[in-house]
Image (cartoon, rainbow, N blue to C red):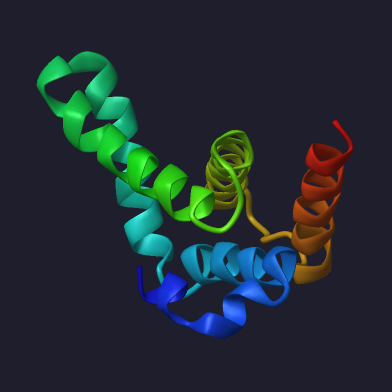
Length: 112
């Protein structure tokens, strides 16, 4: 929500999303790890599923607010995938690589 409140984020969405990924893999990395641990715990404890999906729903809503429902869901899945890969690897992808992934996904969604 804080990210969405900054109007400049909407000027270049792929760049803003890359910055957000790097935030969650950098300064907020510990939180990102806990969120992924919650997903795994929810596999074994169904009572945790609602809590574990709350983040996903909020993320879809956020990305849909600046795109459309299908693109918002795509961006959410891509974002979460990049975070999962980022927390299990020893190195974080470069900002340019992350931005290129989002840019390519958004261009592809416009062409379909």
